Image (cartoon, rainbow, N blue to C red; front, side):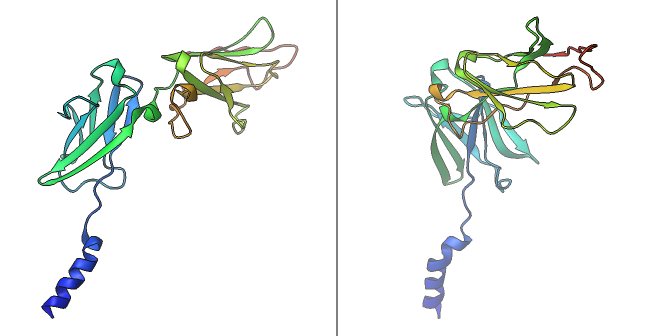
Length: 223
């Protein structure tokens, strides 16, 4: 009987074993690395978090993020610019248990939303949207807009790296609402899995009551 019980536990032990938490990391706006290990569920123990780049010693997290006094993430600055897109190693430790993982940060860059977003009616009778994003030469963007509060026009409108404006040719006499978001361009390591920034604050132009002969122009600047 004891032998059967031991065999049963050996064969089914994996059922009772808990899955180690999965660490996810993002490079936030090229300023710091944000790692978390509570996506699936909050951890039941307080892990110690270590990370390092190639040829450098592991460092414990300088600033933990926590929920209910339990560590759930880590925020850490870059040591130097060259590290931004290197291989990045993480390790969670609790007692005798440790979970190590390697990741490639270039595919995990997330920017803040574009700032200084403006829209104006140009002398060329076109509508111009402009914005500012850091490292714009390496950042692609996409624009969305809608007219008179209707659903957003789709598909969204791509803007290649190095450009921080978008033109709507000969807009109609209506109320336009526009937004823009950005991500690392594929030529610099971005890809399908690279996260887009959140959408910028919306900007508006025009009026629902506009008419072709007497157009009202409204300009909103957010930054």
